[in-house]
Length: 461
Image (cartoon, rainbow, N blue to C red; front, top):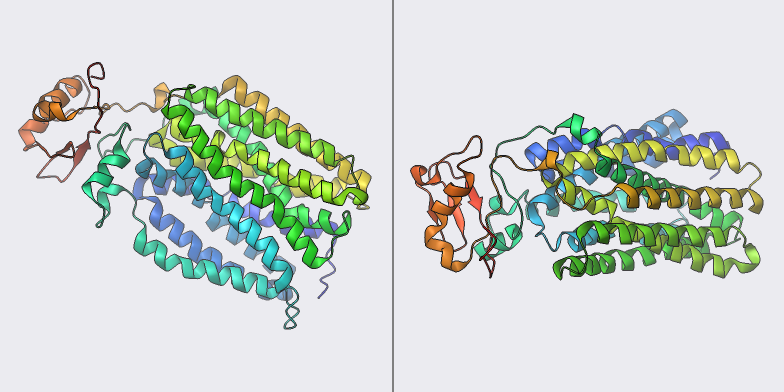
């Protein structure tokens, strides 16, 4: 089935998702920060799956309707990233947040593998031209996912009805916690923070390259490397295998380095950013000098390039939780918005360069990808930070780490540490007690202050 789209219309359709995507991350982060990420993600999955299922109908009906449907899908899915950050800010222990976040984002790689691998075979179905089944299958799967998500997922350990007390203590271990009071982000200080801009620039690099890969990798495989439809699906899925394996492995290594105090947080983040960006840049530069006679080597380099690029996901993507854990959701919304605004240019720049679809034109595109990676690495190394920034520090409670021996004196310790803070409430005057999990509970308001356990408290307080 041939729609006879021009190169410009094709670029507009491919960019429509990104146009919708940029409108919702900040709002999604704000809502997730105030009301939790569970419902935000559920609603995004529901609407996103329905628009995906209806995409073939829109494509056959009207070009404008197709563009609208793709933009609507992007609009609802733009809230997912900030909502994920909001969830992990509540659930991830301090020295496990990198690997846990990387594990959750490995779903992107699994989706890439599955989409490219399965889509080629779905296109060969001798019914309704085959290709609509791509949207029916993946949209239907996402729709079914909504129901287990609503049942199993909760916004924080404190509201989960089936979690054990030991698990609650573990999730709070080493984290700074605060009261339930909602704090508005100090936007002036945030937008003048170079640590935050380091994340933005790194995210721009990542999103631009990822957007380009998703939109144009199959076309490169087919038109330049001369893979057929089924081979194209297999070859296009291979780079995402590397991303899948590297994501969790890098997260595990990163957390091990931090937990064992081998390097500071900022050093670890910068190390993975540099290796990832320069590795990706080197691979894409090498590909630009190869042709169809080296197509297997091109695929290998593409796999290595995207594998290296995914190293950066345990750098900038986790850095929100490092520098501003209480604002992680809404800050992710800002960086996603700016990054996707830049990614909008990927289809248009590529379409402007690739006019005749020649290897020489593709060479220039690969140079653009390499250059962006280098810029992303250098800027991140110059300005990224690894500690909570002054504008993001909690003003209403401090981290209190107690050993078992401190159990009986816990209320007095909390009172002593927090007595000089604004909005301080004397817990002992509100019926506060300390349970074996070191949770100071307000029996009348059902609010609590979590106190993680450590083994050596001689100089922590």
